[in-house]
Figure 1 (cartoon, rainbow, N blue to C red):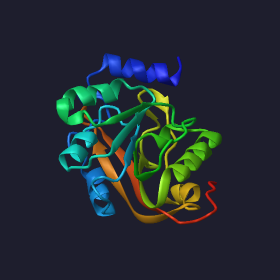
Figure 2 (tube, rainbow, N blue to C red):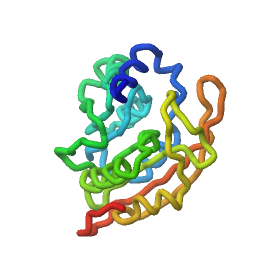
Figure 3 (cartoon, rainbow, N blue to C red):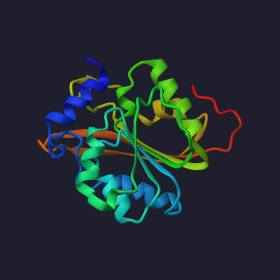
Length: 211
């Protein structure tokens, strides 16, 4: 089964509220977005958006230029249905982040639990290049991956676990680390999953390279 088919099946077979990554209140994501201090009309992209309630939070907070990207659009369509008319302005992209080409640049890139699914070196390097091209100098990158003591798999797929040193090795060529922390996410089934969060600013560097 392809990865797209896998995620299509997930969204067809499970209510959003039963997925292990579901959050009713995306507190850390919202906190980092608020502290970025960007304009409400600045372009924001949520990678692996699925049925995330972060979209609800951003719209309620009056962010008006939001793009939701996912390899399978089923989750995002659940979000649009949940939001009703409030979600009419949400832009949807169904694409594999490893091969996607951004047609516009963004002031903020948010990724909670996509990057850690990229387990091969070439996939991780491609992500870092696409990220660096897509975020404007002075823009922001929010990343949440499984921590080194986090799960080995998610939704039946293997993941790559990280600490802040390994994330810096991957992203610090083009991004300055502003803050990092760890969080224990409690799944709807009551299990704890340890996440490594990091908050970055795009440097105005002409290099535009990724390790």
